[in-house]
Image (tube, rainbow, N blue to C red; front, side, top):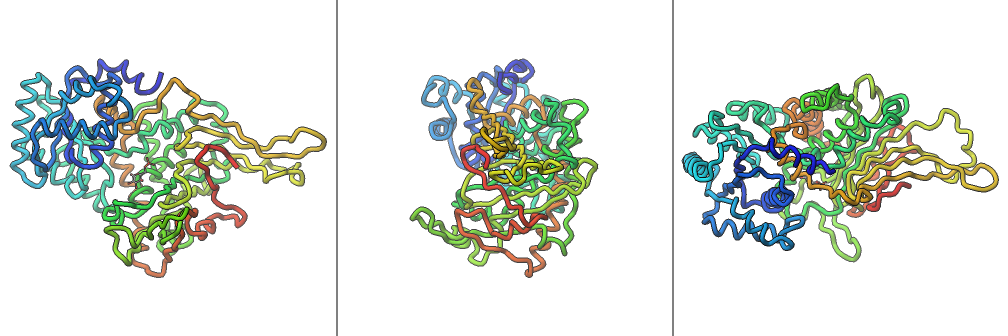
Length: 513
Ligand code: BG6
């Protein structure tokens, strides 16, 4: 039984409710949110009574909105829109629209009337999720407007807000934003979404670690030599240059997704499996990250930017030539870091993290490199360097592999590296659900385990802030240029303590070297 199906058994615990999507005409809503809700509907996971209210700045009637939502489903829904036209029609009956200009206070008065009328008509209690699928500068504006019209009060039903990343632009702005949201909502009403935590394969890291006896003894500084975390993408920034140029790889991927993955890999087992305990453990990891001093940035962090390159007879634009990117931009499209978790379990064990655009493969994985056997008896007889790795492949071809040396059959003692791999696709009966499906459903149930807590967001900003400051203030710190379809600047290999080491080159098909 898949996770979502298990949740179905909790369906009775999903109260009737309303989902209001601010920014409902935007890309995220069309591509991810609405298709995710439709999928939950197809999977029979939504409560008896529910309504999805699109709140966007465009003038639309209920009917034109339904046509738009239908079109988005045809284009982006995972399955079902063409296979289940009747279901789609029924789903659309739950979809509503109210024009809201987020900057205009009075529009929230209109929204309140709309919600009051709808909840009366449909006889739905005002249990409401407000999804902020809007530019970050509007988060505090919308939150304040909701408060102004009492749309945050819980007398007639619970209220929750889901806030997209980026949560802040720096430590100070994140703290400030939190303060502003907390003026109208308690911490347990704020759901900070990080879609990486919604990935089935990221959750599986916890299961791999905490439900199998044989990983536990070796998951520490005594047996682990180093940990590599890679999230590489094949494409460039494309049409997102405007956003990306104010963000860069650290804010876009490291501060949130990859530090959360690191926390899941490095955390202590929680005493019980509930939201508070799990998040208590993961925040401890983030708080244990060794700060990188301004003078040490260059030796611990390598930044890069892709340049114009011919890839398979097609020109990949350089980052500076992308739409809405400043022609002299120093924004990093690649970053690699050496990070230490200063605690008992991981003392002095380096975690190497890298992410970038225009790299050779789209791959996300964690590699636990184990220390070699204490005495290399077969050293002279190895066909390839004997390595012991545990590979946690997040995507694509999700799975787990263990890599180790075996004797090649025949005379003598020649040793070759082999691997044992489990592929998620082998669990044929289970479809892997999309991160947004899982996360939306969790919020509907009121389970915040897979959402980032304020202290975790703050701790990760505290770690990345000095790096961003140093880059801003010290023009001596190099920005390396790299060609598209390469693994970023070669300087990233210099991060390894041991000069013989280099980053693993992952392949699309899940196999080990
Ligand atoms: C987003 C970033 O949060 O995550 C994108 O803004 C990035 O730049 C994306 O491409 C990667 O997510 P995934 O799930 O495709 O690995």
